[in-house]
Length: 358
Image (cartoon, rainbow, N blue to C red; front, top):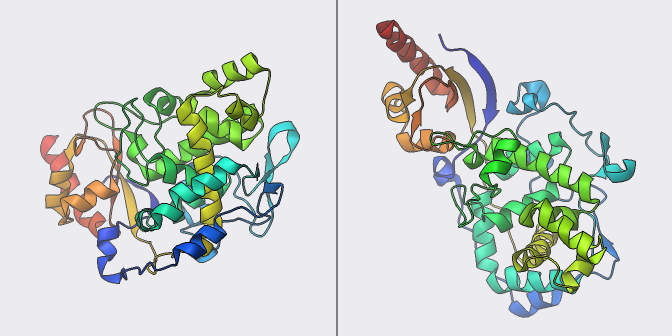
């Protein structure tokens, strides 16, 4: 029989439709305008994990000790309740903090006004859509040692539309380019594109962003390099002999999109840290659904798996978003995700199929 490899947790929104309560969004515009400006602190950083209030410790999906999918990540998980990531260092040997530290800047406050205050309903809809992914994505960032604030990148890059593609070729939740994705160990070909997988893509993006932070020494510059490419950022640094993002912004040294992108991400960070202040509500349901991963060694369509197990094809697509043609290709093998209740029927049918072919 095909071997069961790991267990993880995930829950498509449609599976929980009956538990989702409609969210009423009501807030006075004048109040929103009054809270959108930053507090007069020099830099923004949270001592504790800033997204615990939003996602919450109770929403953590699993831990490496519980045979999580994250056991494959070769780093130590953070200790809860501490302000830094144990065993991990940032640039110049500094301890890696659990949150992004950044200076106040008028462009961030302006982005909050444009991005949230003027489109509160749109941001709430995006938060509702993100809810099923936030717990597992946050856990991956925790295990890799990256600040959970980086979830704001997904809000800006894809608005949590997992299959969105850009004109430049970037795809998935984190909008990774094909070459970058492959460098990070993701499979991107005509059959499988793991940029669409919220678990694998988040792990890759977290490692990439941490590497950029190590290289450039600040999260503003790391985010700029994530958007424009490290080559464009290094060229701007050489041309203007400057390593400060805000100075390069003032000189228009970076591409226009990047000059918009970084303040927008930091605006999303600020809003997510203090979401209730901005009139946002977290959904009332708990996004948790167990799945089991089985190893499939031969070509197999999701339609056939659906027939064997009775699991709707659409659910199998949601669990296996990297399969571009609803098909496990020949000769490669694949870790197929299934609802736990469907595993026994699948393995029996799969074994019968393999016996007939042998």
